[in-house]
Image (cartoon, rainbow, N blue to C red; front, top):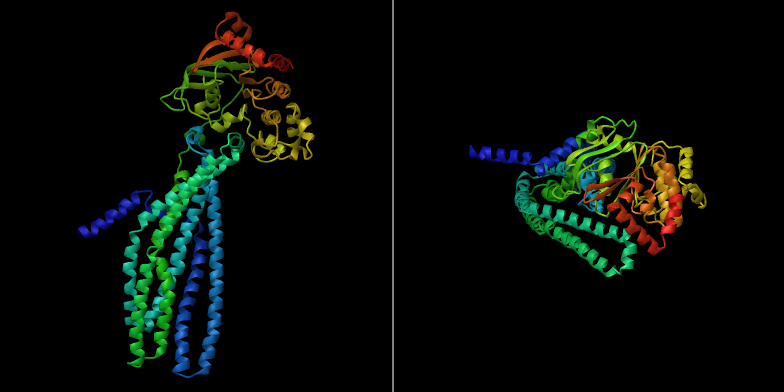
Length: 610
């Protein structure tokens, strides 16, 4: 009884483990194969036709030998020759059709997986990406998306081509020489048992190879994006050594995989040689000594030789399967990422006035290290609220929380008395326009980047937003105008030009809430004048929250909050805070002194006035 229950329990344990071979293959069949079952069936039919043609070829050769040397019939030889033409033509057609059908299915599965993974990544929050390198996702998308179709193609080909061919040729062998067939089939079990021992090793090496590929992509990406820093700090040798180390990791893993996956080759060849030698001896004895017809023996030898390759592939199936399943595990890790409940079923945010309130908010990127500490403040609707303070105090974190990029650990963030944690994130962000200090422009044209601010924006909307952002003049000065390519991250434009395009993108959004993370901090005085004028258009009659590093830019704000160590330590209008003579006044005086020393103060005052 124990011998019956033990395999059953092992099977159940495999099914209970979502990363086991059985579970992964079962899921691949459910999620992908069943959706394409009609075309997989068509490919399987063509494979069956090809297998039948291969078996017929072996049988036909034996018949031709008998017709030539036993019957001495030229007519028989002619008939066999004609049949050979038909069989090989049919096999060629079947091979072509099954290859094209499988390729079409594979391409559809890869495209569907890429869409699923990309969509799943877009549904995550910022915390998910915090400790990961962007190159990791490119590697996962490419490796995982192709692995699913690769494994399915491997299984379908193994069953439809190799197994059917082996069965058909086995039938020819048994029909021609039953005893010889029994001897020939003895070579399979030892080969399969030996290859099973290599499976775990192949799985480990495949994962190591993926990790190495990911590190090479990381080095390449950092080299391209950080090329200016690499040159400025003479980091070429360091980057070269780092890339060489990562490439060496891939090379070592690939070499190990080659050694392990081909380790069964010598055994298979040796066993095959033993089987062929035995068959030749026994078959030759039957024909030469016992007087048996040579046709059956010839058919058997032909079928045996033709069956050797599919038998070898079947013996190695599980070995090759593990290499592909390493990518499938990576794919399912991404596809199975949880989606926040708010994304799926929460109601939309309704904004009327645009009043914003932080009520006893505590938040940290790491739970044990709070950045905002019991923070409470109110931003009145349709006016400017500014935040000042030293770097690292939590100002930008306020914007991250308000955009719903992170969930607070304690307290609540309210917009018109609606908790943003209870509304759908897309509707929340649909009512907010954000312009940051570090502008990100997407690869494409100026027109495309501005239009991204609002779905369905017309040409008139784009032109109006560009004019309001004081960008139309420099855009039309380019030879290609609005069709000018901005380059990766806007590299073809100056800092002031990028900022004005970002403001145009925010203007076209026509959102009731504006978040400005000091867009002029890194600009020269002339560019700042244009950007300040553009921002004046952007904030009209909107609830505006502004982070200020250059304090003269917020002297006319309706409310100023001083942020230190994640807390509001002082609040009021500029004149009130200066009269108090406390932290804001000290901070403003120090900043003004720094500007005077650098010669930027007067430029700043002109920028603010303009």
